[in-house]
Image (cartoon, rainbow, N blue to C red; front, side, top):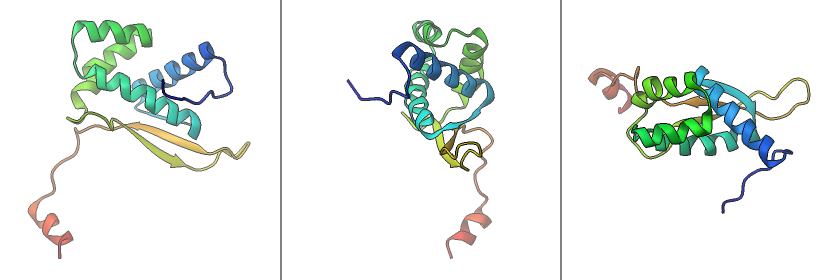
Length: 131
């Protein structure tokens, strides 16, 4: 079994934390939290998003057990999954941000990668960069 961070919590509280932060990530597309939490949520979320790409009934029921939110499930399967890149992993972007003012802890942002909205560069722009 792979090692994971304890995050100074018992197992039940740690699982609830991961579930709730991932739900927020689905609903808001971006979440800012501490680096340790962000790394664990990324691991947790990548597995769920990879499974969600199958988009069948069994997968929906399995993910519903993990998230327990009809709004998040609907958002996941109707908005996020169709816009995910066609690859096996790398659906969540981890980005370091400024330290928290109160206690100076390292902060990180988690962002869901999407393929929509990205337009291919025109020929002129591609040629410009290659000179």
